[in-house]
Image (tube, rainbow, N blue to C red; front, side, top):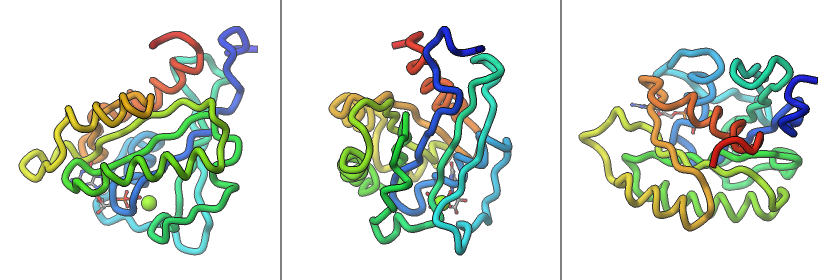
Length: 179
Ligand code: GDP
Ligand code: MG
């Protein structure tokens, strides 16, 4: 019954969205396993991967099912199954590639087309460790997040900076705890 009083589903489906190369798989790996693999390649032959992770701060029965693609976003088409039943979406862009920020709004449209309207949204600007290559400012990211009703977090999957915040924020918002 843990989590029931908070109104949390026992398994929270979180989908990762965003252009190829922005760091979705690295963020998933960093959050679920705590490491970064600079040479990682997308899983070949599977439609998606799903990792379940227990949440240390939200009661023993709350779990996140974190869905990641196997690279189909390159073709800008993810199966409806990927979006279906999602409680939250993390839309990722790369702060060193300005065009990936513009594409975040496109991914939101896709999400709206296939998933329900009531969903927790987080816009993530990843690769903040590459400070000297930055093309999009934090203000630009925040402005887009505000305009689509998303929370905004800047991360580095490479260093781990603010990665847990993304997922803990989702749970907190679903629990009705934090704004
Ligand atoms: P995906 O296509 O969105 O799943 O992106 P990946 O997770 O496969 O990452 C794409 C590339 O970006 C890989 O070469 C990663 O090593 C690199 N990468 C991912 N996150 C970071 C980060 O936070 N910092 C840096 N410097 N590189 C990253
Ligand atoms: Mg990937």
